[in-house]
Image (tube, protein in one colour):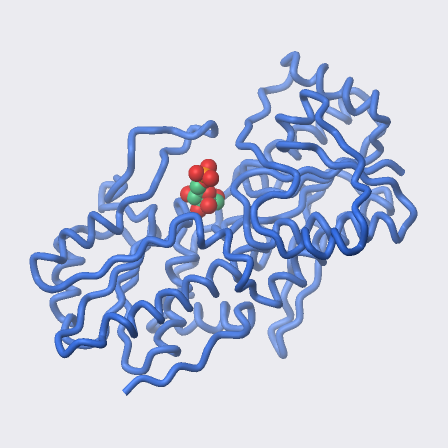
Length: 376
Ligand code: F6P
């Protein structure tokens, strides 16, 4: 079998671990494996290379940030467009038997479209989507590879930063901005920081709970005298659903470019105290030096499972992660791609209730290797 794999959307610290998982499993099963450069956008231009890296090179790739093959934010047009003729000519010329696409919810739209187009053309190519996103917003899966490593990085950085900012007798209000688009999984993950810094209070603002400048000010007023971490997700909205901060620029999927809400909140809070702001930005998805071991292993597992699935003749699916609650154990399973494409999973209210106890239970097993600080 000749398998083509490509990467799409924003990278994560473990997206290359998935790539390597696919390459290794394909080799074990005796298949040939090829890489599409710059995602489907590159495949359309016939940018396809054989993946012939040595074991040592694969090992290095799996710990390297970014997308080894290159990525894209590219929306395939609706059916009937000439792009499909171009794309399927490439698949045909390269004799591709299976296409694996590692990506988030927008990329799963491409998987769904390519799968349907292959069926329409009676083209004998299998298609499977492999999850990745720090945003953790794919439906039908317990969580997404990439999320736990970004959460681990954010918790360590935020805790270290808070500890630094309480060094003086007058503590500063620490503010951190997280990514996550229209979901607050990454912002909510910072609840774990309360475990890392004794006496820390986190105030977390996320898209699932609309807020306002006034509410943030009054919450902070109540807690500003102790160690305080104000977390604000880039996609936080007001009661009318407007972002507290966004730019008029749209990405190629038509999403507004987010970012900058941390600065907005910090300048607001300067009215009532000393404020220190950290915006980890893209580092939160590139911090490969600090990946969660569970995340790394699962990133390989989902890709390896995708190869097993095409080896088994499966097509039109997405690889989801299931969790067994007792003694955390995760397994991979197939879900029809139509159930996943373009859908967004928000943080459920029950995980946020009761001082986020449910959320902490959900995330704790995913983020291993957190430090053990001691503050006075
Ligand atoms: O979807 C992953 C993500 O990192 C989001 O959290 C963020 O809003 C976006 O990508 C940034 O994307 P880009 O790399 O296109 O600027």
